[in-house]
Length: 305
Image 1: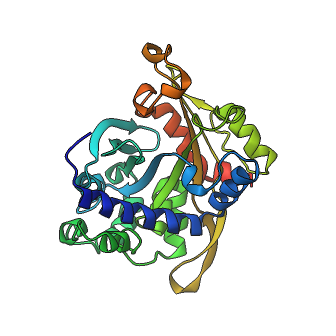
Image 2: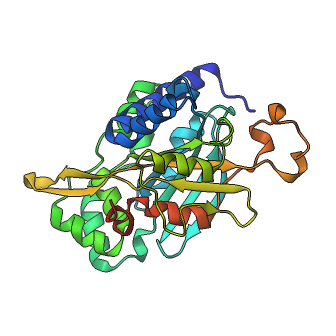
């Protein structure tokens, strides 16, 4: 697909393994869903899952945000693709295509901090102003362990609970990022290559609910692109007890798991199933779908747990 070196791909493997390992530790639904899939015979082992995409949330402030974060994955051969704007949530986003088809797509969103109230901006900048240079510029991107460490280290101090709650009222996205700092927000199971009976979002949702998983129903449990080519659903993020500055504790939203069905493009509809590859299916993302998926961490959904 491009000229990414084997060394760069090995480093990317290290970075993705680190991300997924810690994500599984923090999101109990991941292991539970994988175990249910194995028990039902959908897969034999976790590596059998096709990871459609992974998503990150960032702050649009100096030295951070998409322009900083993307340098990591562009270095490993990812290519920047379409831009998305989420007016109601005050977000910009891009997706990035991988250097080889077996790697996940990447989706990075950024909060338009300057469009929030003065109070919210003041709170956010009181933390993010601690970052005085672009941290990625001083990172050895060929050192997988260093990049992995960076993606899991706090970039600013632990927030105080009152700041978190103030932000939560205005922007749940802002509150999530101010507490989690840099963190993988979710990964996505591709369902279209699963065995028949489970290889559509509708069927996979039934399997999930049968096993007790709660689904995000904002905009309906199935979010469908206008062209009908991309269908998505997601679990509702679990509420976790978080420790804030000064030892105060409060239950906050964690992360979630997403599911995607990418239908075969009309021009490839004649292909036999066994010949269908990633390039024959609908690519990219859909702002309308993503807008509702974001709400998997919002109180309108987590309050139903």
